[in-house]
Amino acid sequence: MIDVLYFAWVRERIGEPKETVETSAVTVLDLVNELRAREERYALAFSDLSALRVAVDQELTEFDAPLAGAREVAFFPPMTGG
Image (cartoon, rainbow, N blue to C red; front, side, top):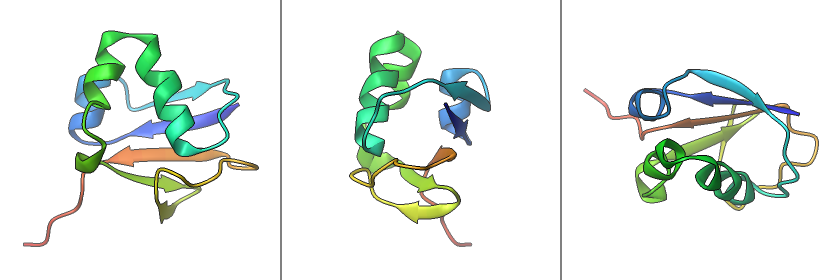
């Protein structure tokens, strides 16, 4: 089981800020592909990964990052300064 957190427009498209999912994913990308296959709202939210950033256990990482031992994955749009 892993906690998946969604922020900003990702949360708006999926319709919830957080969920706990049972997954056999080895990497973040595997998890994304499992989520995409669930429902259209996930497919829409994850349609353009270049518009997303990901953190595993609150550490910014890439989509090929391993999930072994991870407790939390967060998806959010890139931060902009201002």
